[in-house]
Image (cartoon, rainbow, N blue to C red; front, top):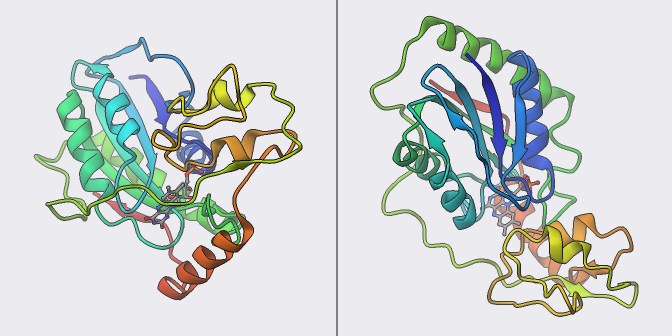
Length: 251
Ligand SMILES: Cc1cc2nc3c(=O)[nH]c(=O)nc-3n(C[C@H](O)[C@H](O)[C@H](O)COP(=O)(O)O)c2cc1C
């Protein structure tokens, strides 16, 4: 049995949660589906694949659904992980389960966990923190037992409802500052190729999914969000979800 850790993580929060789970399960080969390139491995029936996505509007980002759909497996077991910014993950795990099943995986467990909100970064700031990591390690121990037992539920039960929540993106799009040096790093790393390679100061706003990867990765502070708009979103999120939400396990 080989363990793989695949996640769509534009700004690294999902990656942190996945790394904690993978490490506690004994280590895994990892890959970020938000990076350019394809996954060439065919996951065998004995393999286990951790599949992690962030929640966008309570859904799986469309590109992550597409990338999971391109994975090749002969029936590997999958552990599904939804990472969200402390508001809610709503239909994310159900949509992820469906995408995984459609690709041929056999879901055996699911986790929902919180990471820093990538748009409103003071929300769930610094998470996953030590308390989250401890909970994730404990969950990994339970998941490991399930994996060792060989039990595969006929259909893993996860929260979520169909029809899925409508999601048409958010209106906040990064803008370019005078500090942009035009290096094109953001264009190369943009998961949806919304930034023009030749003119990195130009963005195709219809393609942009507001994942904040360009803002996070730019070493020069060349891309930012409007501070007033972020303050508005932050206030709305703090009102909608004032309490700390914690990791949850679904078996
Ligand atoms: C476009 C967008 C929509 C989001 N929607 C939600 C949401 O509906 N609920 C929530 O709790 N967090 C939401 N978040 C926060 C992310 O789920 C969270 O920050 C996640 O850790 C981001 O993953 P990453 O760091 O791997 O990019 C959203 C973030 C973005 C960029």
